Structure formats: structure tokens, C-alpha cells
Image (cartoon, rainbow, N blue to C red; front, top):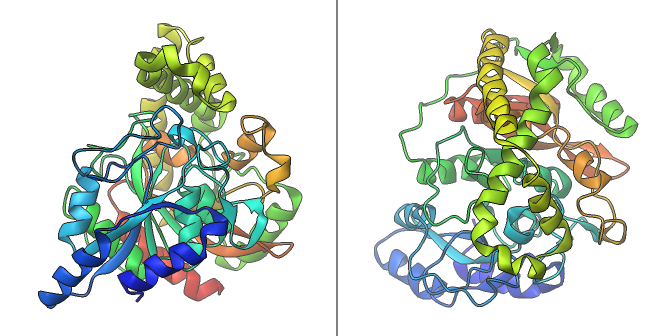
Length: 402
């Protein structure tokens, strides 16, 4: 395990990838205090939409570039109590409203695998910090895939917990129905430790997964480029997954998710509407789109979401989890993304990530696929409330497929 001092040094040496955008001066003193108590401090980096007392928290935005919170977010307080030491803040797509981490007041985060490519987003700085070896664990947020997408593109582990498992006080909201604090990590052990630390309720200890594993591939929902689809099936065929049909989700799920996510984001940002001209263009366009929905559209989408959650629970009742790619493509070049963040690349990167938040389920991205030398994640979607069981299942699948 890295020391806090090593993590701070690596953050400085890795400045060219633009992952850690602010370092925390208090980190070393905090580590020394823990060591005097006989504890081993664990360095962690925290996404720059999560408030940190006395340390700037910019949301990746020009509007908040000088904002310094007076209090730590609840998740930071929980990490500190559990022996984690925040070494700095990680880059984010502005207001966490993007899948690329290129629209940021600090500029794009670069993928440590190939620095000319994006790290994914919106927790791209957290994923890149883990992939570059700055820290073994980092905290992000996941609304429409913002932990799992960069985990997939950077070749690290990333988990979005069950809905409602993590505290949101002191986390700048995007879409409150779907927002969840998540963990990016270099291994499943430190991921589990961090998840236990931030959970607002005791986590049910996971049982060993069934043997043989019972996995399902959702019919009509796997969206992937031909290369990713080939890599996916080549990897998972030996697991003998079943096809699972969820007709309501397949027909109406993504539309319902989009209506709720965009409507809520627009409501969150209405108090700042006189400053929208300062927002990055792609973020502003999404907020303007959210204003186009009517109350009846939102009510209909919420009813679809309720029914979708029931349909999902029926579909996975006798399964360990669903399995699908984390992203439809590997990391594209930064040059192909800049100025087009809310275009086709956004749809591709989020194509396989909206299901878990829609149904409130935990989902984890495992660095098990390769496409033309670039990583792509293998995604498991578990049952709500069974987060540790999902990590146990992930461990079993890594052992089976590695």
C-alpha cells in the first residue's frame, strides 16, 4: 500500500495527465497523527465536486473556480474516520455532466494508458489517478456511468453502489434520483474497504457466489462496437450466460432515464441560470435540453422507472448478476472529442451504463477486456442491497477469466 507521502509525490510527477488538480497540504500532518495512534493511513483522492473543508472545490467550472467549502462532505468525514487521508482533488467534467472529462476549468484529463486519449468521465481524474499509480483508491460519483465509464477506459476497477447507500451531503448534485458516490480502485480489496467506510448503513456480508455462476446478458441492451462485442463474447462465452429479456426496460428504459436525468439537472442549475453563458457549451446544451420536457413527461418517466425496477428484480431473481460491456468503445482520442462532448461519443460511452441507476442496482466495471491494446471494462449489475456479494462475484469472475 502506498504511503501518503508517496501519493503526494506521484501526484506531482503525474501532473501531465491532469488527474489530481489540487493537492491537500494537510495530508502529511494528518497521516502523521494517524501513525502516532498506531494506524496505517491510506491515501485517497476525491472528485472535485465533493466538498473538502479549506480546499478549493471547483466542480470543474469557471463559476466555482475559487470556491472553498467550510465543511467536509459527509463521505469525506466517513473516509477520515476509517483511516483514509485525502491527498487531493481529482479533475471532473464540469458539474459531473459529461462522459469525457474534457470540459473542465483545468483542461482535459489524459488517459495514462495513452495520453492522447480521454480518460472518460465524469470521474476521469479519479480513474486516471488510480491507473497512473498515484493512489490505489479514489472517490468519484456515478449518475449515468461516471465511475464505470472512466474505470472501463483506464483499465481499473470501479463500482457504483446500490441507490441510497452513500451520503450525498456536500456533494454537488447532478440528478438527485440517480446520483451515487462510487469507488475506483486498483484492486477489489481496497475497493471493499472504501465502500464499507462510506456506506450509510451496514453492508450485508457477501455469500460465496453460486457454482456454476448464474449470469444473464440483457436481450437487446448490449450496445457495443463490433470490436468490443467480439471481445466481450470471446471472454464471457465460457461463463455460459443466459439471455434475459426485460421488454419494458428494452423499449422505454433509456428514454425514461434521460428525461429524469436531464430534467433534474436543469432544476439543480436554475438558480445559476444568469451564469449559464460561462458554462462549457456541451454542459449548457444539456441543461437547455432538460428545460424542454413537460411535467407530464417527467411523471411518465418516473412511472416507467418504478415499473422497470420491478421488472429488473423479477429478471435477476434466480441469477447472480447481469453481465455486459461497461462501454461500447475504448477510449477515443482527445482530438476527436473536444467540442463534440455531447455528440455521438457521449451516446456511445453511456450506451451500457444507464440501466443500473434506472433500477437502483449496484454495478461494477472489471478491467478484463482488451480492444486493439486498449482496456474496456466488463460490467456486472447485481441486486440492490447486495453490494458486497457483487464484489465477491467480481472476484470469482476475475479468477475465472484472467
